[in-house]
Length: 521
Image (cartoon, rainbow, N blue to C red; front, side, top):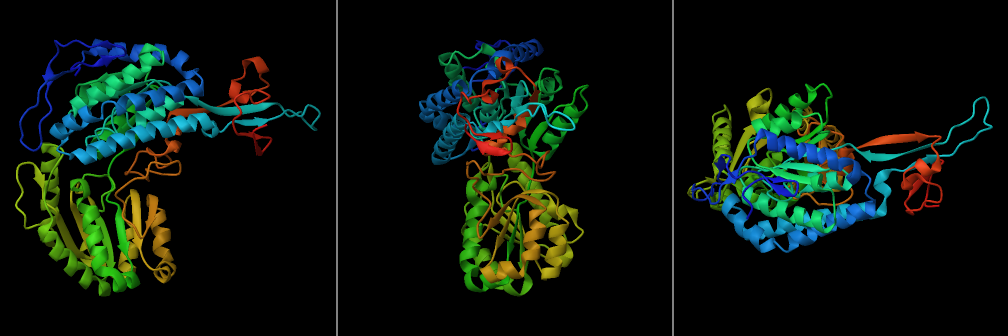
């Protein structure tokens, strides 16, 4: 396992200070240690990425598709090693790590399919009309082009799918942008394995050396050097609001500001409507608890806030309060997350009017205890402490009238998801809540729970600020590629100078908007 940064195809110095991953189940440091790069090595990685950009951005979609498929193939050969190391570094179970590796591989192949199909380019052609009156119409053609080198910050809670070879990296590479990944300190060994797979794939596909680098080190030093560097043209980040906001501020303060696509925090409100609770309260309570405790609640889509119309709440709460007593605590990703979870739940428990239900199973080292809090809407309103994310297996249930719930829902900040459970009659009667929810979220879920993000072309995993820095973007699904592109138009350009995607005859046989109509001709 390589214990130094990847500076393109070369290795960084192993003489720099080293950090160790900590096994969250034991609190013990893991070998080996991983060396942070020097400032000069960070500069070298950026310089190589900038040098690689002209060639890489002009590779054919077919070449980039083959590159992504080769990364997937290389990762597939490392599944056992990734699972073995990942268990030690994250406390996640073997099945979760293998599943996440499979998701990452599938994500890479999905972007390869997208490149092959060509529709993502949004290629448009408006042919000239020289004799149009009163003025001639010029020939104008447009499509998406890559921005430049991208810095990707790896997430603590997804060591694969939102980390070195995850969605940000896959979408940036698909767009034609070199990537510099900043490893997360919680899982440096998994990062090393994923980076080695990308580097092997890049060599096999004869990609420019600077197309990918992996850097260890702190976010405040290495991360900020990346974000502030003039050659970096965009940033992908998944993590805390504090971390994302710091990157946003640094990027905005540059002489040339750049976009930071940060997925930050979300409490993902869930609404249970009256008729469905009359019919299915026990089943819904059990399903809710399963969603809440999945992965020890360490998902950005965890259902952290629930609204129930008051006269339907009793059976749901009774079932939940009984079931949660036997809910098992689980090892959290790292000591910092575990402590933050304890602090957040203690804060909510201390607020006036809050009633607490918790697991009766005693936790061991590094474990988070499932907890549910219940409060009346009148005590919830106007108390900002109760709308903060409790990152872990905890949720707050608010019970009130439909008018109080509508008011509380309208006061929420932007969220990644919003879920609503109801019969057809419920949903029609409470359509005003659906309309309110739509304005607050990136994904509306009907009769389901938010945990679990399908990786597909139509997925939106984003939402209004502060759930993300840009509510028009998504970090999952093929629309994610447009975070790292910009539209460019060519007016009256000679055929020989046009990108092949825009040339007459459609040599790549991709879908294009020709004079306003979709065509492959």
